Length: 117
Ligand SMILES: [Zn+2]
Image (cartoon, rainbow, N blue to C red; front, side, top):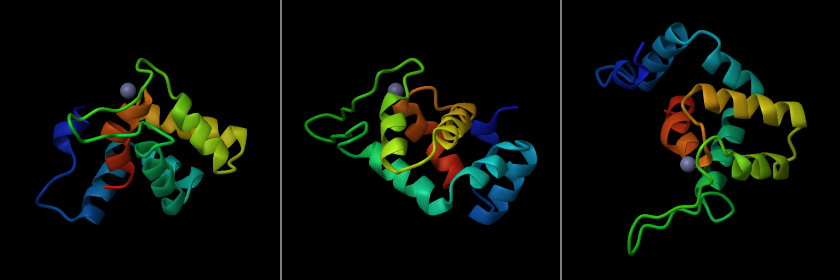
């Protein structure tokens, strides 16, 4: 199954795509939305993109911080600062990893738009 090309379908609305996605990846998105509310997911992704996270800079060249590999330490710190329980933090990290987010920047590149298309 190649979710990168199969989803989202540009001819469908975001909502339809989400339904297709839930059908194709049973458990993951459903589970994702059981862990955090959409506002919490958005806050987490926004903070991960900002100075306390990967700190994306567009000029003079596009740069960002990330430990690479399977390093999600920036995410972990942000999720803890959001006041989430340890077990919620590990559920979130497991979910983003299952969506292609091995490290902090991959979470933004791969997992964020799947959770919040
Ligand atoms: Zn990375």
